Image (cartoon, rainbow, N blue to C red; front, side, top):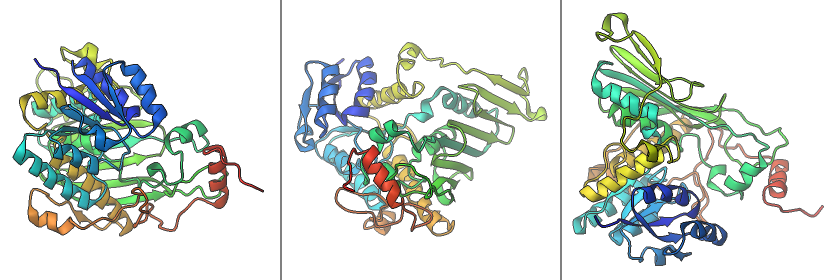
Length: 423
């Protein structure tokens, strides 16, 4: 079988993902990053046979089959479109589009590309393939939970405000996307598993944020978001309801999920590792089963040794494998990794934030299968993040005037950026 030739855009996270594709017997043939030091480090680990580029426009011309987009969180759409125009398959990390207009453009260009050659697009969302989420999908598919009514997902990732090492690596200049990202936007780790487990697609969203300003604290920050979390509720195409967060920062670190049906429910419990709690109504307990069981799920996968070498609890390997299988089969990946599901998740993120700014007003999630919906949003470029030299044109926080103090910015410049200001 001919090997799939893969290029990596974004040498940091991209290199981590490349290890999974090498385990899947793919060839990494090209690497692109504008950061010379990061590019050199990744290239040295990948060895000979990898061509390095600093320009994406040159990189995308390389003789290859697919591209891993592991660049900045909010800048995937224009590069995915260039890949489509060169007939390349796309494996896109975290979020597909950062504005509604980009979602329209992405799908239109995808359709154009597919009219010429069969390109595969996959959202590289790895949390649905963590062992407990795979187990909950197995339970739902087995039918013993009854009709599914509700699911919830929390991605909670607090970081100490004085963690200078983290800030230097992840938020190293004031306009960095992590300093502006609303709490609803980093949504795929919470919403993706709910969609995968249940098979449901959001159709309406509403959200509220929890505002916890730290304006009086002497910490180095350029962050424009004073919200600790956004609580997002969706009404879905099958009548179910989801409650999810984006990236929250309350309590202790965790990622937890729960699915509830008419007969029972399953969840991974906070602080209990990968264990799953399965509970039934006493009168609905299947024959031979216990009403309440706390257990460690099994992978039941012949490639378990490779899964355990992958990152993010095995999710990185399984997601990469799904992409490779899709390419080989010439078939788009399953819900919620396909392009329409990806744009739907982005739409939930974007419109949930507008709901926050509008006091919880519900927003309909458009179906971009239709030109009517596309025309409604084709010029909607509201964005709370810097896009290159273009500043945000919508607030990032539930309190629009929130901003770090001058003292906090001074500490950020000194301790994170290494800029000593003249006294």
